[in-house]
Amino acid sequence: MGKKNCDNNDISIALCTYNGADFLQEQLNSLLNQTCKPKEIIISDDGSTDETLGVIERFREKTTLPVYIIKNEEKLGPVQNFSRAMMACAGRYIALCDQDDVWKENKLEVTLNKMKEMEKCESPNCPLLVYGDLIVTDERLNTITISMMRKQGLENEEDMQQAQRVLVAQNYVTGCTVMINRKLRDISCPIPQEAVMHDWWLALIAAHKGKIGFINEPLIYYRQHSSNTVGAVINSARRYFKAILHPHTIRDKLLAVLVQASAAKECNLAQSFEENIINHDIGGVWKLGIHRQKMIENIGLYFMLRYYNEYYSDKLKAYIKG
Image (cartoon, rainbow, N blue to C red; front, side, top):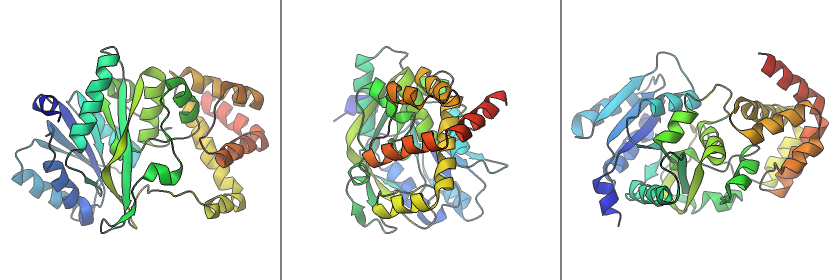
């Protein structure tokens, strides 16, 4: 399946690392075992102090695949590290890769086939993003749940207008499953400092300017361990109770979402969202249809927007003034 596509693939893998020596070799091995070989592997290291760079150098010596290493002089964090890695990619398609997961051998093949399928229906210059589900595992790759999306209560939004309404307020796309085309990279990068996460930013731009495709199949073993930068947060009553006890933390997390939307100047819905918050028009936000996928989180969203309305309005005004 997909042999023709794989014979003519033009895929760059953008792999970001930071102190990942414990699990990196398994991930690199899974990249080599892909049924659809990448054109190149771009590795951007964010100042690792463990054996990460040694693992990478030994890998590069042994493989015939082109491997290019970027060493950040200053720590950038995951968002800007991925931005830098993506900007260095030469391929027509870019697959994002975390350092501690393991890919199924057909991960690139299935994702590329989905991308090619979408290209048949869209214009040649359409920005495209493809993502999928994950198997969540422990450190030893023992399965915790066979579907992270089902466990978290997340749904793919097939209609792009509906996707826009959700992605302004909530992300449902997991970055390590993502493949984008060069057009989306060009209009999304460099990712602004205001972006909450790189995958959220890419999805937000893709929904407004192009198309998002979903593979309803887990193609990655998503390893959870003590050093995860961002892990698989499982929704629970305990999590919501904790939010009630720490409202200022939730307030500031939502502020980051509002600032991200404000930074998306090319996204009309995001800008309308910003204008309504500044003008204290929470009803206007409701009319725009902006919402989160779970009812309890949606109730929390509108409660926070109304209760801290003055705070958010003042902060956004200050952000716009620079």
